[in-house]
Length: 316
Image 1 (tube, rainbow, N blue to C red):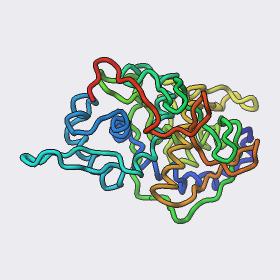
Image 2 (image 1 turned 90 degrees about the vertical axis):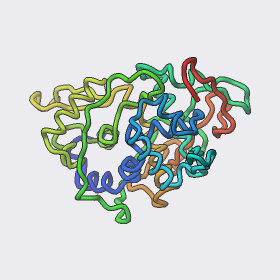
Image 3 (image 1 turned 45 degrees about the vertical axis):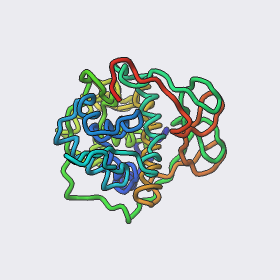
């Protein structure tokens, strides 16, 4: 978006971000470890020991993430051994609906990840028989879409209220990954919300602090970490050289597909509420609902219609 600072209703942006399906969706499924478990399920992980051996997740943390995903009806446990009781975890219909988000993670890793050898190096679309890259597309016209192709209407949703008692945890951004099966998406909820805020026109420190309710000290560290990880760049403001203007990089723009797909999933399959951030596809004029298509045949991709090779050394 090309808004100037004086054009932005910061209170409206803050309320829209507070009540967005993106913000609420990231609270329940956007942390690094949960994303690891979900991605693992899509590449064939089923048993507790599969994740434990290959994902470098502490046992207690893994147990908590699996329990949470079962409670959300993303995974369903199936008993495969009675003594002692052991369960395999299978994706539900709701879990399968996360496939678009998973494809966007894969695409980002191929372009910007530092260690993607544990992810499938290529994907093949069975319907057309071609190796492909996933494209973010408009469900109304099926055309490929980028961040620049959308406009936004902000309509705060009172049914998804801001949790004023929420603790703001801002762990340091991961700039590398451990060995083994490790999801390389090294950004957390707050990094993605900063990217969303910049997309909505908030390019300055005071704007970001206000709309995201982040204190100056924490925000300074967050922005520095994102700059170090090449997710933001800062430049002197033309009107006031003492003031920094933050803008997105190719790597952070590359996360846009993941952001909109996760937001779509959260609104459609979990909260069953419209998001307060409502994009419109400029070319067709229709409300933008994300879908992911094959770069070769442009068909919508389904998990059962895609094959891949597990990298050598990974376990399934």
